[in-house]
Structures are given as C-alpha cells and as structure tokens.
Image 1 (cartoon, rainbow, N blue to C red):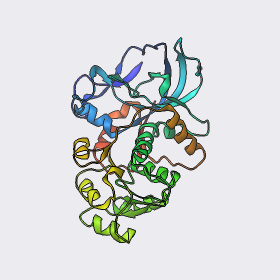
Image 2: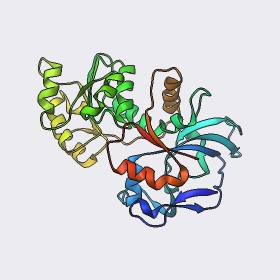
Image 3: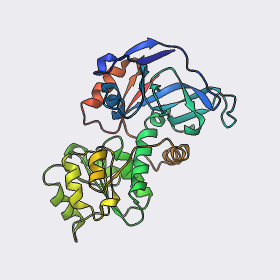
Image 4: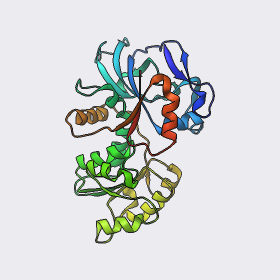
Length: 310
C-alpha cells in the first residue's frame, strides 16, 4: 500500500509517500480502506518527537489517528462488521506506528462507529479525535444544565465542537475565546465570542455579570489563558486542560486525554447526521500532500479541521 511515513523525528519534511506492506488483520480488527484521515496537532507533536517518553514509537511510522473509510476485511473474531460497511474511528493504538495516513489501516473493532450515508467521508474523518476530546473534557468538568461554560480557542478543531456539544449537554451560556476575525464564526456555533489577551478576565467578567465567574472552563490554549482561567472559574475541579498536564495537576485542574470510545463516536456522528453538530473543515489535501497539511497546522490559526483524502 501507499502510506505517508517517516523514519526519524523532525520537521514536516521528514515525511514522504512510501510503499509499505499491507497491514495485518488481527482476530478483533477490521481492515479499512481509507477515504479520508483527519490531521491533528498531536500528529505534529509525535512527528517532532515530543511524545517519545509517553508512548512507544516504532519506525517507519505512519502518522494519523482519525479515519473514515470502507471495511475491506474483518478478523476471524469480528461479527458486527462486514466488508462494504462505511465506518469512522479514533484509531489510537498502544504503540505509535501503524496510523491512518495510508491507503489501508487495521483498526480494533472496539473503536469503530458506523458512518451514516448522509455524512461525507471528509466530515467523518474530521470528527473522532477532536469530537471525543471535546465531549470527554466537558464530561470531566461536569458541564451540564444551566452552566456558564468558557471555551478557549473556540474556533479551533476541538473548540468549535466543544461550543456546540456544551449546548447539547444543556449549558445555558457558552463563551468562546477567539481572534476577532473568527467572532462571527463563533457566534454561528452558539457562543458569545470574546477576544483572548491581557483584557480577557475583565471582558469575561463583564459578559457574565454578578461575581464575574463561570461554572466550567475548557482550556485548549494553555499559557496566559490557563492563568486567566484560574481567576475565572468558580471551582477549579470544573476546569479542564488538554494542553499542560503538569500545570493542571499542580493547580487542581483536570487534565484530559481523549480515549477511543465507539459509543461516544457514534453519538457524535449521529448528531452530525441530525444537523445538530457542525464539523468545520478549513482545508483538505490529497494524502500525498501531508507535508503541506502539517505545515498549515503548525502555522496556527486554523479554523476547524484539516483533512487528508485518499
């Protein structure tokens, strides 16, 4: 099969199109013909070598954890899926090597959700990791009915989904930090936009009124936003960060790392099918242009998601 792969850590240029053996199909796996693969900031961090002490890595390494495609083959112990089924998955395995940026990928059946026919492959591929990160972080903070929720980086891949999911979970108000050029976009998702920067604490306090505090904070930015959030959240146990685990733990904040969950993935894609969750895809690239996709993400300021098409 053709795959994007690299054999050393480094910048985006270490990646190239390579001919690699087709994946093995374990007894509880399905072989998926990749139609689209989402690209996430974590893919760039893995490629740069930043997660070497967290996860086992093996070369040559095919990046990618998001996939949407068609089942080609099922393992001998798989009974719920058949060749021809359209599926999507957050396909993170225990070892980093056999990712989704390829023509074929073998995925444990416990990670797979059914793709509705009305949801295109690009949209489906942009959903799993960002959607699960969004949902699981909101759940970890106990976001629910009547809450005022502050979402940092609300126009980003995770943030734009968190804004919408928070409303699905019953939040009374969602406030989203974003650059002014993205404020209309954030409004269209159902949030009240506010500019990030030095004046954020006062700006949020003015929006909220009363004691100037919010019930839930979802930190997708870190740095200054993390420090400001400590001043804005009513209870630190209801603040989550996906950016800086060490600082989160030091400050009584919940650190979240998305886990594959087929049931939650199905819930998310069913929301998309129902028109209640919008997956914004800023740009697609053919698989062979994965280097360009990584460079775009690393440049920052991406609205929504970046997806590769096979």
